[in-house]
Length: 124
Image (cartoon, rainbow, N blue to C red; front, side, top):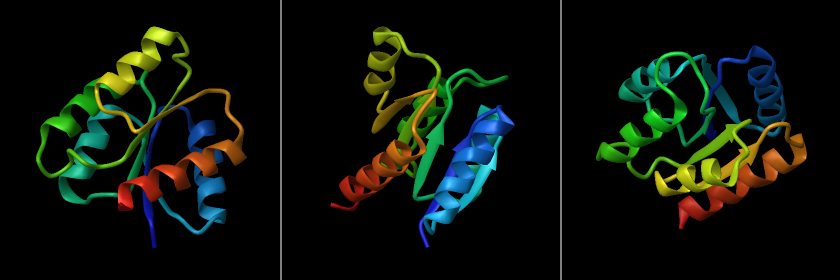
């Protein structure tokens, strides 16, 4: 079963994403801040990470930088899921190695399509 880690400090977003992915057959784990995400992937590696930017402690961009700097997580597919919608924000996310970037609010159907597309690309 494909495992997705949702990293967001908004319980409503976590619930929505977890519900949509869970109903589509994914195993979903979640943490509420950047440091917890770093700690999680140090012990278990998901197949994909959904990562918010604005969180307490480590930001999503800092988490992404750490993931890409580590040999064990450098290729972990990461979709940024954030309210940071400026063109410069999106550009920064891709520069740091995000595989996709979804702006809140989002369509649950679009979310699922993008998750499947990123997973398909990473499997090649």
